[in-house]
Image (cartoon, rainbow, N blue to C red; front, side, top):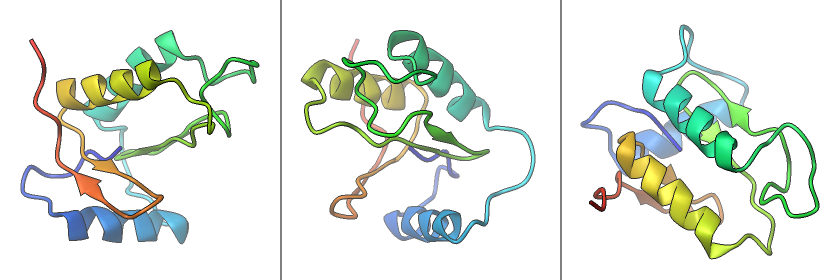
Length: 111
């Protein structure tokens, strides 16, 4: 989940992810969109403890100033994916699927 500028391209998201993998992170305060997304998501699906029914394969979630990385369990319920997509739309976040490298713009919020 990435909080980049409105004009960010999929290539920008992939480049930012590569910098993250190399240990380079943006300085400063956590982007308000990332902070709000994290609070809302972990209120539903806590990442502070390993629970048998947790969707997280590697808690806690990796949170930086401009992104959150989530590793989901293979048995992750569809409702978790739907919650992630709904919150991404609400907070105008881009999704990077690390399995295939696809980047998705913020989903259109469902009213």
